[in-house]
Image (cartoon, rainbow, N blue to C red; front, side):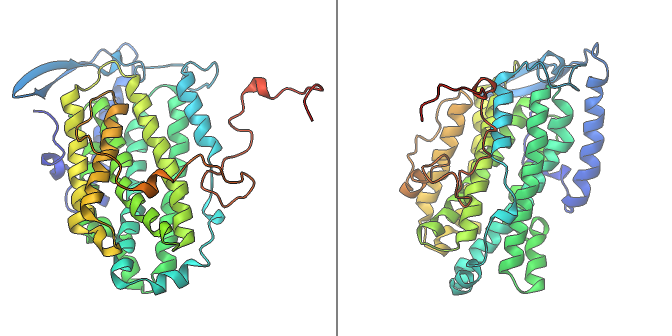
Length: 383
């Protein structure tokens, strides 16, 4: 039967934080035996839904250039996948740390928020604090072990470090805003204490633990996690920026949303390199599942109306983001929704602000993205 995130939730169990570590590792290590012998031609068959019919296809990881055994994976040069390498260098140039975010003005703003606004934001931060750990679990247990291309491994290694910084940032925000130790503990354990967060986490975790889904399906699923599951919450925080509130939170949101956008772009790039891609119907189904869960999260379980946003427009925005992801995955749009939030159009991740002011969301390490041929001393420059 085809992999289904809903029915596979039982793989996650009630205490996910304990179960997925052991079960995922067990499944992954057996699956990664493929890479121990480059002559291994182990092939498995799986069924896929195509409309109302079922087609049996043969999926072989060793047919994938990204996944087949690569004895040269321990050395970076010569670069073989230049597009993947450029993406890694772009990520490297965007490195930042939590110490660059000033939270000194946020406390007063936080205390002046309405109770509903504080409730909404604290629950969003709780989801974010847990979600980066889930993304890292996938990178450590699955993608980094399966992918044999050095350039991609460089990106995944750097992404793991950046996700740790995101998790630290969200944890610091909760620690700064929430004074009550019991409430803090409740938020830090959101995967187990909040049903609305648990549902999103279970969907992502079920893809990590699945031994039925192909690599391509899982790439699409985690592109949806970083591209769709985060999108509505990012927009909600940018809504607070529009109101001139919580400068520390909104600045960190700029940095993190830029990073997650790059991670989603990288997933789409990896997808383009796949030989055995999921069909359009399967891709659309995975994305639609993520859209439904995210819409429910922000319009029912934790309605954005609590901070003065329109729930119907939020649904539309999530559909707009999903369509954009589908196009990147070479699929037709499913929703044909337009962006209802003009303020999101004005959030430029490569904007016009002064590069030398550290407190800008498009901050980038100087020189990292420069090409080798640009680093040449010359006496004929214009002064």
